[in-house]
Image (cartoon, rainbow over all chains, first blue to last red; front, top):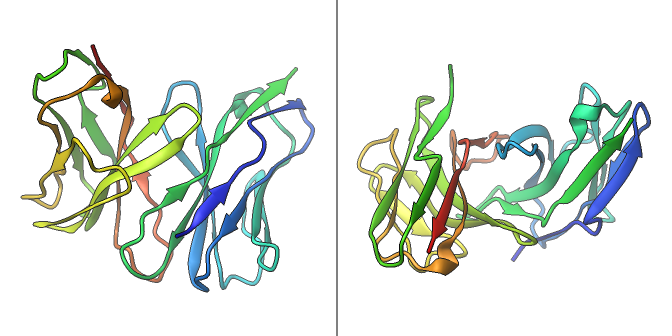
Length: 115
Length: 115
């Protein structure tokens, strides 16, 4: 069964600086997708970025980029130029592209951006 | 506007009183699922549905029921709620679970407290 590990329960970053949120995953499948979601204090889940296991380039979406290292099974989220509004819970998730396996989430990292 | 809606958003109830949390999506998505979010555990899948009349258990199905009579609706039923079902619940939908990228859209969440 696949597993997602986020080892940082909480992180602090200064406004305008970059921050990396760690995510490692475990699966024996070769075809899968990796996702990052943001959950602000209001509670909704906001999709940020996606990386397919066969994508050769790291995904980017505005200030978000995904540092995908397949051999190390890591999919770290990099947020550049942090803003106060980035303070939230961040979840890494993975879904296999075969079978009926669910979207599996890590336990999350709480990011606090300091002015 | 493409969205997933859930009702109610907040609910306080007592042990044993049957309740239903509704979920509806307007994107003609085949795949729908329910998650619960608990502190320190991330999101865990309760049930999912591949299409109308096709449902299956996720990781934590005990104490829950679902139905999928129409494509747009996927209600979550707690026949006899217990305090350990106090949680934040999310409904989500996506096009399919196929090989291509499929963003999973989340509803706003339902915060349930069982006394």
